[in-house]
Amino acid sequence: MQSVQPGILADETRLARYLVFSIASTGELKDCLQDLAANIDTRSTVIGIGQSVIDSLGQTVPGMHAMPSQTANGIDIPSTPMALWCWLRGTDRGELFHRARYIENLLMPAFMLDDVVDSFQFDNNHDLTGYEDGTENPQGEEAVSAAIVQGSGVGMDGSSFVAVQQWLHDFDVFDDMSTAQQDDSIGRHISDNEEFDEAPESAHVKRAAQESFDPEAFMLRRSMPWAEGDSGGLIFVAFGKSLNAFEAILNRMLGKEDGIHDALFNFTRPVTGAYFWCPPVKEGRLDLSLLGL
Image 1 (cartoon, rainbow, N blue to C red):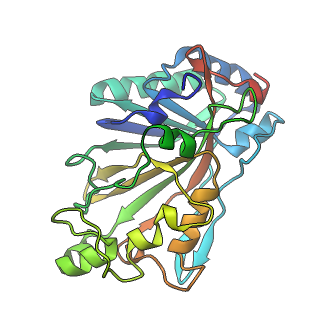
Image 2: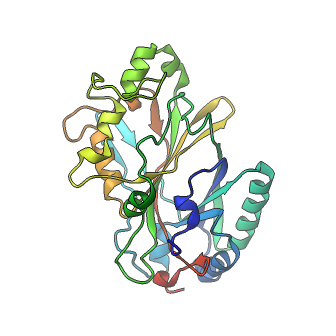
């Protein structure tokens, strides 16, 4: 689809850099967003706009809201809303570094850079635990149907909503588990990535089976591992035509339906969490018309 930010539907990302910004000056907001729209390459940089920017511009994006914080079964899901999210995709860390500097300068003085996280592809789309990630991702037209807004009019069609969380793995806990315990936590055998029926109800694949919801909760995941020092985990990125699928799956993972929490929480937890609206493109540039720009 020509109206979609191309990186959302792209099949592969070798390296990435994530930038998140807060608002520093509302008076410069419109000019800086227009500069961003005019000067970034939407093929290699995906932009997500947070609720605070939408509110500051006095506009409304139907279906958009800030991610709520949640607590269930002793598990805390944080909400760390941000004004702007930039997902830089590439193959060269040096190029990503300089592109990030260029974008930061474009956005000054309206935005202040709050965090930078580098990520990478590990062993052909595996999580750092060694398990393949995104196995059940929709493909082709099914991916478009799951991730992209359609039939909602100019300024909305071609856009997407994205949930972004940084998960921190406890590798000491994970390494102390037997292979059978690890497989039971995921619901797949690490040896061949095959799902198995005898996995417990807490297994992640059973908690998050997108086709088991009513309506079905399909979303397009574009998650990647991150590592810094001796810490690491997953940058979870899920695009949807709305935020409903993500929220339905997270509620089940937390055990809000039946009291059974996802076994992932035994060795990993999110430390950040935010929603963003990814505007469509028009003639290769971000279309910010819904924001009055």
